[in-house]
Length: 192
Image 1 (cartoon, rainbow, N blue to C red):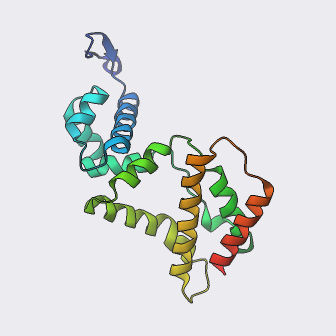
Image 2: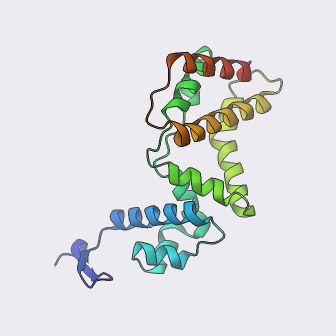
């Protein structure tokens, strides 16, 4: 057997080839499911390792900590709006269309995990930093100086809220053009 195909027994004693990428995906998938169902505080790294059928040490090796794993869950499959690449006059429409594209696409566990875990101080700090660094600050840099951060935060709140509600209520229904037009005006007002 070559080094890359070393087999190890699984719970059902069936050999499984070692595959770091597949192992990381199993860990992320099970962690996302557990965090979404139970929240950050309740879930243990041991429970995630058992659900993913991996050695506990692998989680620390791959992610550094439970919080590092939670951060990876939030990042998995996440498509962020490319705010710097969009001409300013096109931003309201871009944000409205982006919000309407937010369906289940593997993000629902991440959103549920964030929502269910936000009461944990370390998760709240992580979420605040992610929102600030990935969305609010890049958008605020595009806005005129007066109240730029507040307007950017309002846009992000509308963006996240719209995407969240869309996932719950109408993930498969295409939005009407009239709704996208109205949402564009909401973003135009927030950015204004």
